Image (cartoon, rainbow, N blue to C red; front, top):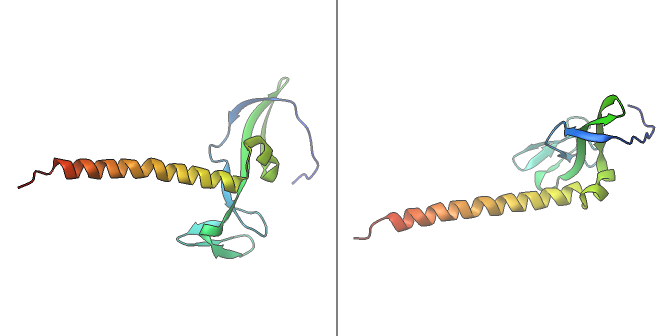
Length: 120
């Protein structure tokens, strides 16, 4: 992997992948596997509780500069400023929002089922 920084003034054409955050190992930053309540890093073997997982950004973009097309991937905390919070913070917000959206639907359908039952 090339460790030199390069600056590119380009137009973003598309997101290459809609999944732009991933659970990461606290030691080596590789993607970890979340199983039930445990996490495991296949690269360094680090284990932990899945509820304590940290998340990192991985934004893959198709961009155009002049007459050239590039696929670039930007990793890590340099994207915190762009999104306005850490990837772990964004993950918590997305999870809480998803939980709120799913709960009323379930509660609403349960309420309908209860109201529709005739009383004797």
